[in-house]
Image (cartoon, rainbow, N blue to C red):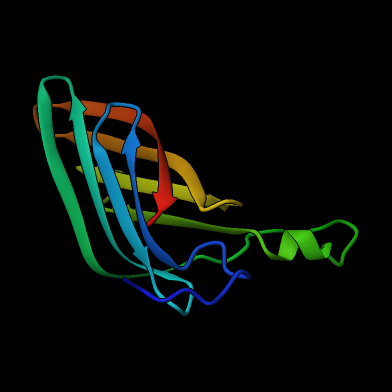
Length: 130
């Protein structure tokens, strides 16, 4: 298990959950606040499987613009990530987005586009930190 940075980190650790299809999702966030691996199950249009992405390096950084600035301190603790694999133009394409919430919770969305013989689907997911 990845050691936590203390109470100030919303994202560091190992996460497990399920998608709205009832399939598993798991991912790891390193001590430097980067998603390093993702495992995502899928089931749609008579297709099912698991996508595994190892050795990824996706920052979990705030993507905020506060007008007028600066952002309040509570906004600075916000963490989110976005990961994609493949190309939208030629498929298959997978996109996974997530936001980290208080109380060891995370939620997000996964998009599967142009999977051969399967088509496309968008699902929601929730996860908790182990």
